[in-house]
Length: 98
Image 1 (cartoon, rainbow, N blue to C red):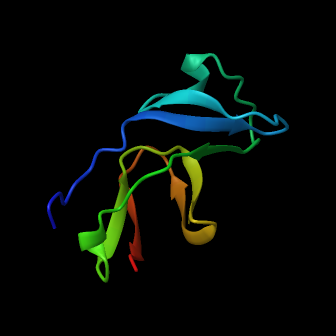
Image 2 (cartoon, rainbow, N blue to C red; image 1 turned 60 degrees about the vertical axis):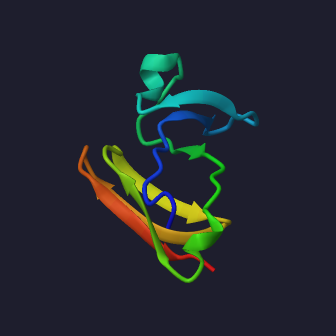
């Protein structure tokens, strides 16, 4: 593969529960420290469009998270990939790229 690691740091979109709009947020970073109201036990969503290189076809692709707090569910292309519970610990979600 030409580029085996790509950083996903930067601008993502965030949607707070009950809000129709997606707004930009910086990752890594905490939504509350960027002016978003984060309510206890209320989920919110992050999304980011990424391009996986064509030379990754047929290979496993992992997305590594270095600090998600505290319950995360990962979907790629609308397909559920993995769930994680925990504090600011590193973990990965892996999929086979077709």
